[in-house]
Image (tube, rainbow, N blue to C red; front, side):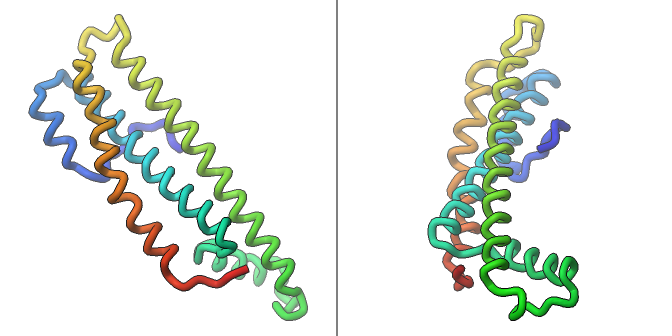
Length: 164
């Protein structure tokens, strides 16, 4: 994940923060904390989706399409029947594991940035630090956003997919 300023995908919490009349830096830190929290919840839901796919021994469409596309590029003369489904499934399995590992890494990074942002807001050098209740707003917002983030991956998992 990028260390640049994160953007919120849902604007509802911005209205709540504006009401608090925070300083510019306090508003910025709170908004950034909300954005990291949103991305964390989204990434956690994606990870859960990928882990469920792995446990059910199915592959998400993006992995299936990517493997087929790359097979055509890497082995243009080999037909899929010649090449065998065993190798295709092995490549899909490795790709799924790589995606899962990547999501774990992103989650660690988002958690680090959340802790860093909270510490920055509580720093004695930051005289404009937002009040404690403001720094708790991201937790309540992200808990409320979790069901919203869970719907799309669940719909994908419920769709008929191709087994291993």
